[in-house]
Length: 404
View 1 (tube, helix red, strand yellow):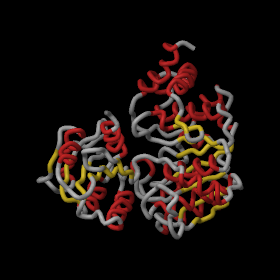
View 2: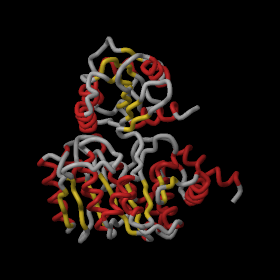
View 3: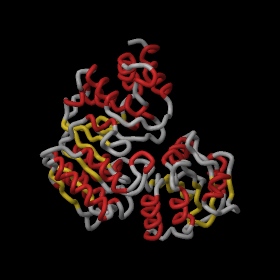
View 4: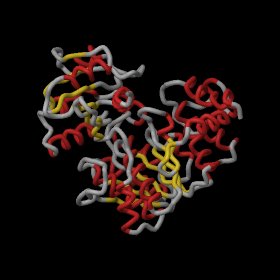
């Protein structure tokens, strides 16, 4: 295939552009059928949840790889490059390879509103890449919800719901019990459905149990680990639940001895979640994609435990459709200086509107993420600059600070 034709795959994906969610499985199913249903060529583990599903997925993939299992990983969104979304083993898919497969998907796709969304196109491409790589197990993170998410074209051998909280209520709600019902849409008859004990209130938990009974899935509640071992690079007490789910799922998919578990945990790679970024001559950055109230609470708890409360400066921005005041409050209470910014996204809240929404008209704003970050990095302080409020914001900072 020529370079011109190959490059058209990613160009076509970009042309699909950011758009509102279009729930439904028909478009992805039609494309996969045209490709010979590559999603049927591997054992699959499908992970839903309000928070922690990406961390859980990345940990399962690392554990399986350490145990000698050829695994593929599909997550979203990406932080710096779209190639982050698809891994074979511990390697992100090469850009040229993704170009090629997306070019095939583009030629099969219907045009306009009948065609796939950006997320659906990548989901189909990921499953075709998994087949071409002859993976044994695909570890797949749900995009939003579960029942009508494009990833639910799979027939998962293991389903996971990390937790359920009030997020994306405009699509999944109106009540948190409705969110739970949508996430339980990934359960399958006769197959294990692993559910995290923490982070889910009694009402949504009852819905998960009821849906498991209705579908015939074998629901198993997984308690968090008592402690997170020093071999795991993922920080935060909230990771105890994610790690417990990952261990349970990985051990159900393949036999893993203690050595494989230790190697797997030590090799987990997951950017932008309590990630510390050191740069010579500049203050360290603490990057976390907390973008909803439970995520912000977990981040605030980590700041307390790590002795960073009152010592961080906060660069904050997020999407207008999020509950930004509830995300902002626990972080602002632990920050000295705060600068509000808008990530590069059509959904981003403007800093001026954000000041009004959080009830802090005196707060600093910056015209760009780069300007706000530079101000805080140049300021004196005995703690890091905390970047939080959106994964888009974290990704933009990573791009800025990865440049020479």
